[in-house]
Image 1 (tube, rainbow, N blue to C red):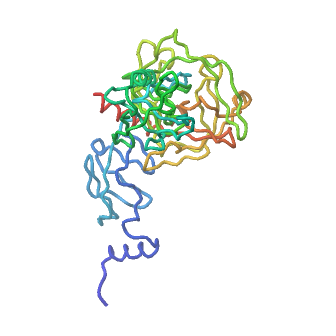
Image 2 (image 1 turned 90 degrees about the horizontal axis):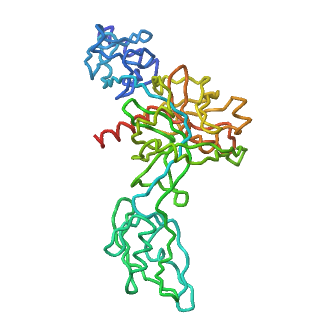
Image 3 (image 1 turned 120 degrees about the vertical axis):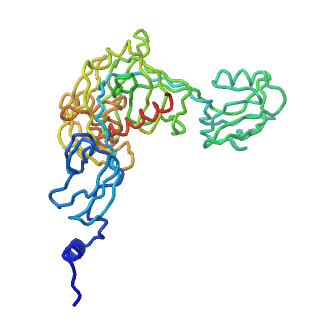
Length: 407
């Protein structure tokens, strides 16, 4: 019988016993992000600061070679897997919870619907039947650029002939569609479109960075009719005061009723509208009204515990209050999601006041053990005491993406 070395025999036993390929004996994902100086079951120290490369004692799985970016992991002296290591400093953020008003001017004029036109005593289908679609963004009529409903109306008033060329953007592609003009008895031109050039609403400011960049809402701003993400031309964040609460119930989400406080000035500009909220630059002179003096570190997704936490939000005037919640489920994901956390409101005061999570509460920062872990993003329609939260990591990725574009 041929002699088998003890290393080979050991691997054979492990493979047969566990019933998985060798490459799956070790479960650290490729491109894993770790916080410098944090030791958890999945954390990798910054190897530039560690004399001896890391080890996983339970499995006797150790690093055979290590650098600042790579580690070859193995059992004893047998290499099993090479992984890429990304060390990341733990950011410090200033959590807010302030109620904010958001005003967005769209990039282009959005088609949100259509209506039937009267022509020659009979009804006709609108121009959408000829190629235009709800969700198209108009940026030019004939050869005149338009960026607002008012500008569209001016061009139509001066239009000559029976056809107008509508330049649109659809799915990031530009196209031109010729549409017949219908005229009223007063010779006013009509094209049968419902259009919109701006949106406004109430939300919650999540955090501000030391450099003045902010994040809010925890979810995308979508047009109410088309359900499509709003493309931003210009945007502003204002102070807001909650005037009353519409309490939520099963099947009927509640909401904050609030007014914009323009006398206090703008908080900042909105420059990005993403799946994980809105982002931009704050005006530093007004930040003292919406954030604490001391910042808090963030918690990475894998550090969040399914345990008690708190949210910071406003339910009366502009007073930021803290309310107790429970993290029901935490699902750290390799791919970004605005629903990585499931939360339940347990605070009796908040349940009595609002019924749980309500519209306008999106963006309320979630704090656990002195760290910012995420923000409220959605409410469960059939159970307003529960909702989703977005991990703070994904929100910071959006800030980094915006900073890389603006710098």
